[in-house]
Length: 121
Image 1 (cartoon, rainbow, N blue to C red):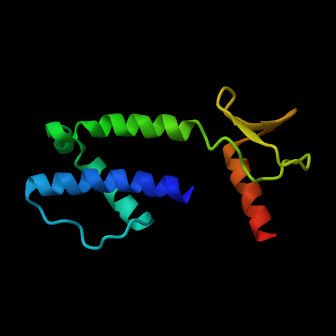
Image 2: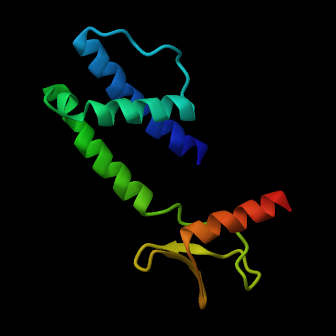
């Protein structure tokens, strides 16, 4: 999951940085790639979306956003969470929008809670 977030952050920061560079504006302070930098880049790109999209070189932002929506919508495929039935074989089923195993269906929100419960246990 960390690699996935790092990849997403890198793409967002590239668009933010390139837009600032093309405008002749200073780069953001700090070179962090953590949640703060990711949040800042998202907020900046959303606040300046119309201006970003009129720059021919940056119209790829739309394709990048659609690709990430598809990629994240597919889910991770597997979760370490233990199902209510005790099994650890939950797999993401994009057709139903749940993690499933046999007759069990676990939502993504419930799955995060199950993982958090196990880590805290």
